Amino acid sequence: MNRLRAVSRSVGAAASGRLGARAADAGLDIALVKVWRGLGAVALLGASFGAMQGGVIGGGVGAAAGIGAALMALRCNRHRRQRAIEAQLPGFLEAIARGLRTGSQIGPATVSAASSAPAPLRHEVAPLAVELGRGFRSADVFDRWCRRCPARGVGLAAAAMAFAATAGGARARAIDGVAATLRDRAALEAEVRSLTAQARVSAMMIAALPLGFMLMSAGVSDDSAGFLFTTRLGLAILTCGLSLDVIGGLWMRHIVNSRH
Image (cartoon, rainbow, N blue to C red; front, side, top):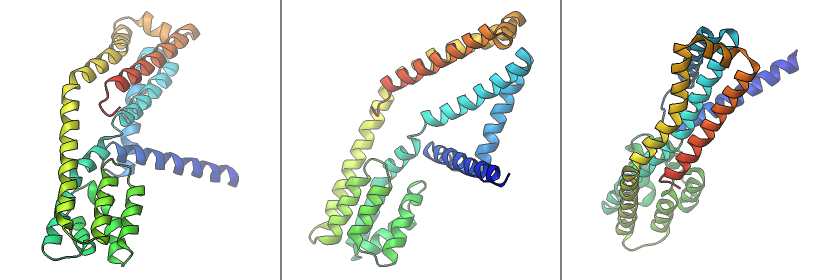
């Protein structure tokens, strides 16, 4: 019994950590308990609809479909937090450059810029400011920050700050140049995403049409719902269709996604 409890706690902790990481990557700055409540509400809604159409089996399928849709939405938005960090990096670097122009060293200038950085970048640079405040070597701190943060542009920013920490000369100008490069890159990516927005919406609509037609048919005809949710052949067809629909949606998203 104790071993079973330990295993269940371990599995629960792992699931909570994974769900929290996915929610954070999707840009949801909310408590983990609220994420679990939202997932439970989606599962309850799907179970209620499925139970009305196909009884107990339909309720189970509906709950699974609701949870799967919620997790898929988190996965599809997994780069949102990284994009927000990339958009905020130029302002962070420009704040460091202003501090250098006033006569500050790279460490105090970085700590000051980190204290005024907006979320979610503030959460990423907070450990950076703590290590610099404790007197760690600046180049090592920036290297660890580069390895810790997966957002694009962090490597270039960390290299520029490490250079400013070890070299003399026009340090502020070099950091401003990197900030301008990152800003231009973010503007170009935003333009590409804007030009491909219609293709992404079309892909989402194509992937959602089979599911919408199935729900409409189930709501109009009880025979269709009974066949899909209460017979083995119907459940097999439903599982196969939903699986193919998800695969097709992911494939189309991969094609039109501007980050690939």
